[in-house]
Amino acid sequence: MNIRKQKRLITYLYLLIDRLDLEKNEQILEQIKKNLSNEDAIDMIQWLYSGHYEDKGLFVFKKDKLLELINSDINILLYTIQILEDEITNCVSYSQREVTTFFENTQHEMHYLAHKPVNQWDEYDTSNYHSLLSKTNRTKLVYGIFASDVLPKDVAKVTTSPSDFFDTKEEAETEIQNIILERKFNRDELIIHKVWLIKDNE
Image 1 (tube, rainbow, N blue to C red):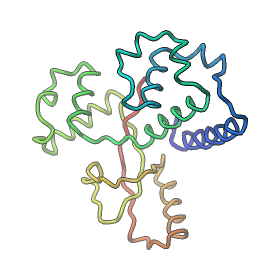
Image 2 (cartoon, one colour; image 1 turned 180 degrees about the vertical axis):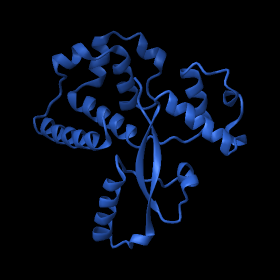
Image 3 (spheres, one colour; image 1 turned 45 degrees about the horizontal axis):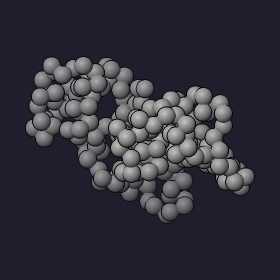
């Protein structure tokens, strides 16, 4: 699913939450109960009650108890929105944790980069890592709007990276025109850069 479709879906999910809230919904649809795995339910509970439950404690609960903790369709929708929003802003960071997870999940532990600390990588290493990500279909190319002083090589390091990304450069250009009109930025204060997002491969 491209970013444009994900944004549209998120908008409708927020509208659905508003409607359910007006109806004082405090239940979970039966069809959702049937299709919700225990693993998904545990993920939701850990998000809803951050830090309150440990994995091991939740795995002993039966599904009825897990559903009781989730409580409502609204909570499931809020969790779903969070997952979608994370997906469309999940930039390749080249962090040690990200790299370690990638090599473990793709059974590439013997690759030389799996044993070389990220802080010792040079441009050749970074290029090799990115090539591996692409070959395993773990990334997708999108476009982000940055301050004009951000260089392409620094995109992954920017702590104030855009909260919004676009499927095409043309869409990003259109958004810049909107920003200029609404916020009175000058065009030379903004620049579009390619950004690689990590795809959800579940």
